[in-house]
Amino acid sequence: VALITDNRVKTYTYPQLYNDTCNCGSTELLTKDSDIELCAVECRTNESSTQMVPRGQTCEHEIQIKITHIPYRGVNTTYPEPEHPPVEISFVKELEYDTDFVIPLKHNHQNVILKANNKYKIELDSNEYISSMNYKTSAYQATDSFDMQIKTRKDGYYDNPIKRWYYKEHNRK
Image 1 (spheres, helix red, strand yellow):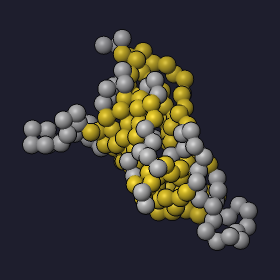
Image 2 (cartoon, helix red, strand yellow):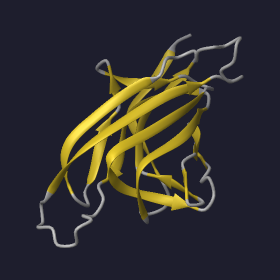
Image 3 (cartoon, one colour):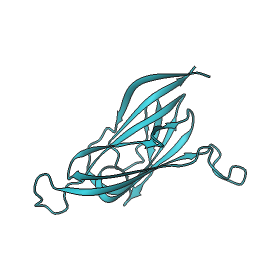
């Protein structure tokens, strides 16, 4: 099996503007017929909770992203561990309020590869609130490369702190 790589970085942007804040979120992603190389995610820092902050004021953000494979039949006694071990990425940076920022999804100095026709859970936890989009439903989204569904619920809504995904597609031939 050869992998044909399209070296262009593709993006997926959620079709809604920010309307809330959260400090955690999770999304399930189902890859289709291609391996997906996750390069980065884009988020936005929250507006300052204190209304009168000088322009350029910063705050240290500590963000953890965990990517976990979800086996087709689930984790049980026959399959006690996922096929692919979880990947954890730490991002610590001093960031201005109300600013977009990109988190590289590198593990052992390489982008994270999601195998074709597999399901993954991507969790984001932050020490600070960041801007998020919230939906009344689970916000199922379908693309040519993958399907995704927001899984974090708060007060009857589904919150998503990730604004944009950056990825490459590796087709199996």
